[in-house]
Length: 515
Image (cartoon, rainbow, N blue to C red; front, side, top):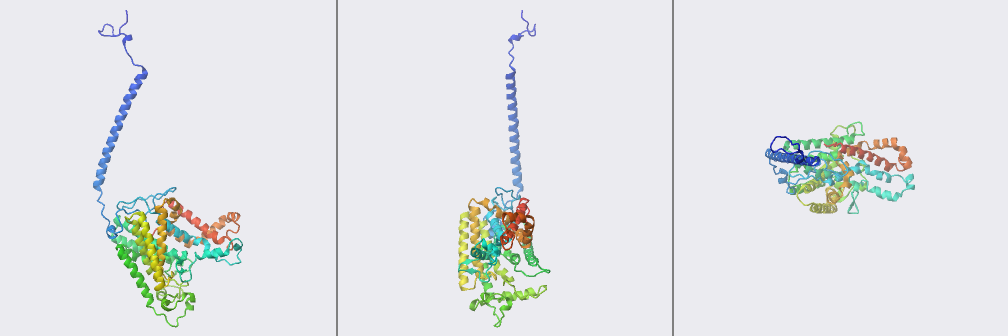
């Protein structure tokens, strides 16, 4: 008789009749149930997150004010709502191989995340040449024939090369159509200030700054630039040297006036350029030089004195020089001002405003809706037109002289600096060469600091490099810091390397010196 489970209970089964699942099958069943439960939980979480995101988006949209059409866009026909985040005050976008500065994008309508690298690269190129003092090429070329370096190098080649890093004595034009690249440094510097102004104006206006705040910012910037220029001119003196021919002072003197012309339509800005140059030319023409004027007393050589219709443009024998005699002697100074050794004058800032306005025109073109390749073509056309007008003016109206910034020089140099912008735009914004711009960009985003270091501590820095690493340099390159050997090149280049490393560290730390 077999034993029953629950014996005496109807329907009870024997143990052999029970079907108990195996442990493996039981685990599979439990796993299936758990997977279903987890899937249900995940679906509910995702559904809940989607609901929250939808609600948050609706709340954010309701709280956000409608994006207005920028007044700048109404005033600038060349400017669309797709304003690039490329102002001189904003920080550059991500470059491969580097950690970029992280700041919020300017709140402009439909701002692009791609910064125009060409602008920073162009500024960096200018500052590289200035801070390195032309890499010492002009200094090397000026060494006497007896210098031992000429036993190694060809003096003729370096003398010819040195001319390109030297300011001509007076006439800037040579071989009718050529120019010394060193004469183009200051026009390029001032031109790039103008290029950056539309970007900065758009950023500040779209951020909600009042007209008064923007005007005060521009005015304070202008005053600070003037004073920085005076400071640099006084750095090697015992007292303040109140003179205003430094590039920073020249930019500062004209900056606020150019700023006031930013809201004008581009056609009126072209008219303003014409009026500035024509008015300045007439201002020189009406001056009548005394018959017994002593040119030797003002360091004017026969090569710097013109005859006939061009006589008003002679060195230290023009109306702008007469203005300096009255203006600079009215300011505190130890010695009476008699003349500027190079013939530079304070009133150069007036035609320089036309140079900055050319930059403004290019800046508003770059910020506008035109296609990139069309922008490149327009830049080339602008370069050709201004260059051609400069050549024509230099043949018929006034000489091309950088030192007194003649109207013909403004147009002549304008053609070159616009063409340089077109080249940088092609290389670093149209072609896939953005990575190559990085060494220049590091300098360009801190251009003011680089300029100040180059003007104030280049010699001291080169001396510190020689003191600490001179032995190493000598083992690699005998005579590395000898002034009659390689010193003319090694000293400024070594200082420039130190400056670049400082700029790179500041770039990594997102520290930028701006006015």
